Image 1 (cartoon, rainbow, N blue to C red):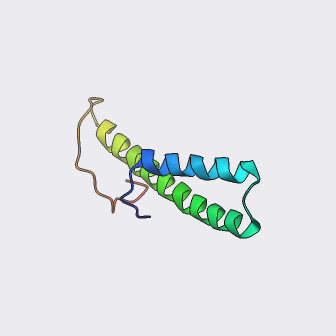
Image 2: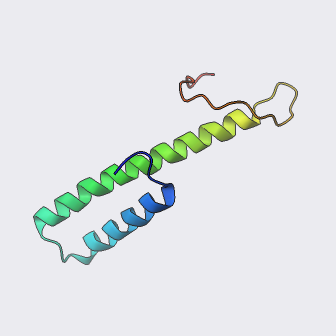
Length: 80
């Protein structure tokens, strides 16, 4: 699993894990492993969503109220 994974792929895998965990058919060891993978996938999804939100905010910021596109900089601080 990498941070380069697409949101849809990560979410689909996460949904599969939830279904397996909810089925109650996994052993304790398998459940723990699936849970760990699910946590990693949820972090990937959260990062992708946070990055998308920041891009939208950057796009919408304008002093005169107009929509303008600004280059996305991952190193921007939260207060900019």
